[in-house]
Image (cartoon, rainbow, N blue to C red; front, side, top):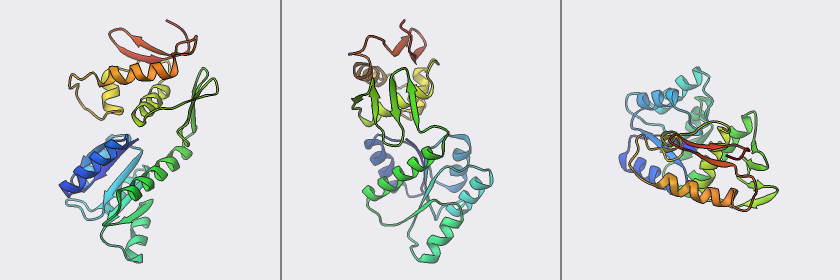
Length: 226
């Protein structure tokens, strides 16, 4: 899951980025509403976490601008203002959920995951399939030839992205940006390690190999051998 965090408190934002990362998700951070708005317009996010009180452009105004552009990315509003009228105003301004500060991270994560499932349910397909490999985007279950495959959160995100781009070459840069949220290659072997682990889980015990290395280009998920 890729998440946009719009929060002007540097410590709070750093905590969210770290905690969400440990839960297998990637995040972009904006410290003010204007930057958050431009990131929302230029990026593809599964969920937005938006602080209500922001410099430059407050959170509710930011959401109104986003919704005016017909962007329906689910948004969780964070605020110290917790009265009924405050929550109603937040929801009517374009928020999909409202969480009062201080909050427990476990609750925030649960709410974010619910919002992401709601987004998936609005998409044309809630499942992905390549040959006999299937991924259910609602339950996060993965099977091949009806045999369950257990994946770690990052492996799941990697497979989901590859399946979304089946039959296409996916470069290392694309994976770094979409799965790990790096905007440059830090000369790490993290991709190689995860590709190797994923290939062992989805291909090792099957005659037809699905995950292919395209020499000098990247990777491709396809049903044909070679």
